Image 1 (cartoon, one colour):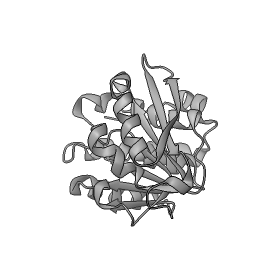
Image 2 (cartoon, rainbow, N blue to C red; image 1 turned 120 degrees about the horizontal axis):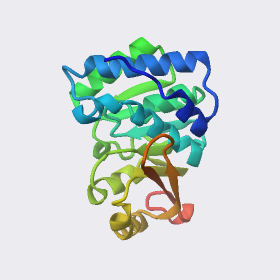
Image 3 (cartoon, rainbow, N blue to C red; image 1 turned 90 degrees about the vertical axis):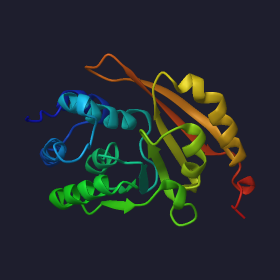
Length: 221
């Protein structure tokens, strides 16, 4: 199976791609396909629609340009959106955080092939990193249930930073619980942005959390 990068769709979301960026994105897609027989990098049923993962990752930049210099891709899995963001915005330092050894091995192999010094792999559970790392922007595309993952994810956000979640139709059912959990951590729900994915019959909802009052955030003093 060969990989065709959805260039026009991505550029409509994140701006023009250089030849270098196109080449690296294609190489990343080929690495995902090549690893599929051994590692479930993305779900088997979505492998033939791999371009959708690239479009979805790029959609973040149409809603939130990454502020600051550090990004944490929490539960990176196969590298979406972190690898794509690191290629599209080389000025960012992106950490790909995942606890599964097979995914970590794949990510490290991929980064060696890409030769991108602004990308790094962190082999750890998000729940175990609180107090040891922080990011100007933490992002999560498919980390897990809100009730289990939101609080430890917020613990990795720098004082003036933010957490952005990729959500789908179920977000409306999770919204009140998320607001409650965030409030306990000194965070508030900020922007909620629906981004239609070009060429696809669906929309991604990007949900942002940020600190309400820095002085009142638990542990901020």
